[in-house]
Length: 369
Image 1 (cartoon, rainbow, N blue to C red):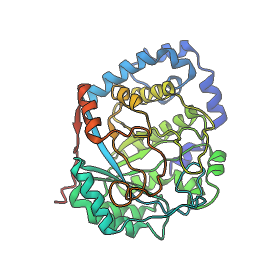
Image 2: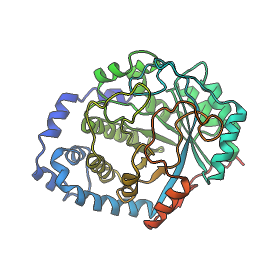
Image 3: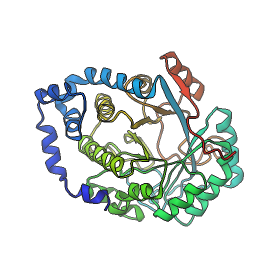
């Protein structure tokens, strides 16, 4: 059994019709309910729910404060490599882009770590392109072993792995894995991933199951907004979340909200997701699930990130570099995508505190020291 069995019980076109057929009366009825179901979530992400966004935002804020308090966790990504064997139409690291490739050495990794620690971070996200030979399991394990004494929380966003490979990394101190389906529309997925291991839709779809079976502490999922209708992709993400929570109930979960950003050989979004749409979605997720962590990256603008703090977001990155060695070792190497909010860590910390929230640098430890 895997999520694939649940996934196959739903039809994209049918879901799309149902979402767009929802009325304002349906939304008003749902918002009177104390408990929001997956079917209710479909109502809250519909176009009909737009007039109710303020009401949803207030409820989302109250739920988040009740569950997480006035806290925002801060983390930072560290890109280890831009080498990649996949063709992805929306990514600067795609193997079709003729760009200089870079994989960090031990000395370069430690140089990056020294800078990141000086900023105050204790949660780090290691990111690579998908190149099994260059940055495979042995490289990632070595990187975790190299830096684990410096961080209480190490997450990765790399190519999907087999269950035994995840178990190996977990034994070295891995805490969380972020793996985005990009889009749950199978035909569209194939268009944007024509070559490489990532072109296998089903293998990627089953990745969170392999993680759950491996006993990972936290799984992050999501869709890349711009490839397909964000409403339908978000329903599938919520469906995936609920399946995982029921099946691997000891694991924590997070949702991210990446929108297409400019990059080398850039792809124009097929469907635009406005700021208002994103606010609606964040609130809908919080009303659906009071425990799921909601994360906001530097893809979004200063203004949006200033306001999203009150919407239900629980973690936020700052001062991100999306190129390997971007902090100190190789600042001019190619970015995966352009960030939007370029403020420093100190500036983001001040912004968060000015809104009455406490910045959390560490909320869990592997006790490797």
